[in-house]
Amino acid sequence: FLACVVSCSQAYVNVAAPLLTTMARIPVEHPLALAVAVTSIKTGGADFLAQRIAQAGNGGAIDTRRLGTFALYGAVYLGWWQHFLFSKVYTKIFPMASVFAGKTLKEKLVDGVGASAVLKQVFCEASLHYPLMYVPAFYVLQELASGKFKFSHLAGKLRENWRDDLILA
Image (cartoon, rainbow, N blue to C red; front, side, top):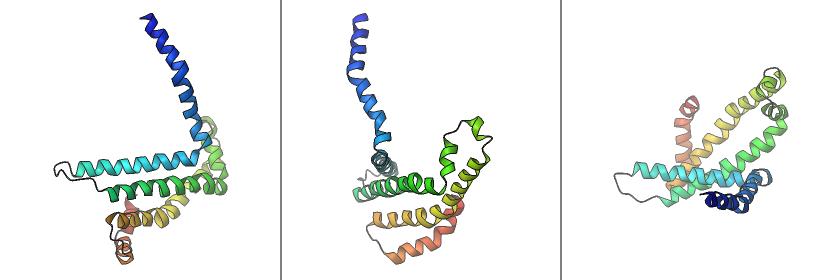
């Protein structure tokens, strides 16, 4: 038993520790690549599961066009664009929000300037980005996934659903 423990310990030191150290550097050294990869896999995976569950009794095949569209949306909009928006744009417009986020709870309770910056950023996100960019981008995604993109159909769906989508959010 002791020999096994020693052997496992050596394996950890020789293999796992360097691998974990390398993995820990990825978010710091390659944040955009990580954001794009994670959101693409997450969004494509979510669509894969949704299709599997929806077709559980039907035995239907996975719609690869739809899956690819969702994965691309995850990579481009959720990964690249939102990384740029939250890491570059919002940090320039609301620099104190990032400072506030890094504080302890005790420090946050007395930082009115930082709390105000966070509230302004949330307001900007909820009143500008979400309704004017995210919702329309999602409807573009739906049209692309259908394989029958028509601007008139897209505009009609946006007009019909935009208000309800914003209320639900």
